[in-house]
Image (cartoon, rainbow, N blue to C red; front, side, top):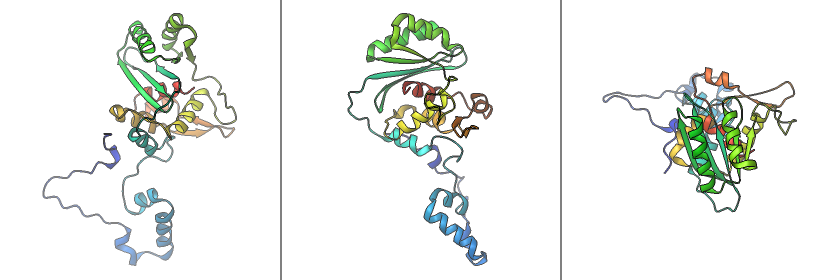
Length: 250
C-alpha cells in the first residue's frame, strides 16, 4: 500500500494543547459583500485555493512547479496493467558523491528501479548490463553529459545500438513547444504520468524529484524547466529519479 502523502499527515501537538481553528467563516459579519463573493467563487471553482486562502490550510504544492503532486500520488496508487510494450530503461549518471539511478519501464508500468550511491563507473556498467539482459531491455537511454560520457561509451561498446546517449541540453524535437530536449523529456513524462503506475516503495523519491521542479516560458513562449543550478540552490538533491524516468520516455 502506498504511504500517506506528506501533505496529508496530521500535525501532532503535545497533550493538553487546545487547538482552535479560526477562519473567515467566523467573522462573516465583519466582511464586505465583495470579499464574501470572492470566497464563495473560490469555493465553487477552485477548492485548493479556497482551502488555502480562506480556510488557512496548507497548499498541496507551489503553483509554479511543473508536475502536480496528485499526478504522482495517483501514479503510485495505480495498479500496473498488462501490456506487450517493449521494455526500455533510463539511466541517470551521478558518480562519487552523487546518485546513479536506473529505471526500467514497460509501457505505463515502471517494473524495476535501482539506485547507487558513491558509485564507481565500471561497477555501475557491469550491473546495468546484467539488468538489461535480465529484463530484456530493448533500449537503454543513458545520460551522456559530463561524467556520464564515459559510462555511456562503455555501455555502448558492450551492447551497441541498444544504448542511446541523451544530451539533455540539445535542441528539442518539438521545437515549437519546448526549449531543450530536457524540457521535452519533462513534458513527455508529465503526459505519461496520467495513466502510469509507479512502484510505491520509492514514493518519497518520486514525490521529491517529480513535484518540486519549477518551470518558465522562454522568449518564444516555449516551456523551459528550472535549471539544475537553481534547483540545487533551493536545497534539493538532483532530480535523479525523475531524470532516469524521463530518459526512458525519449
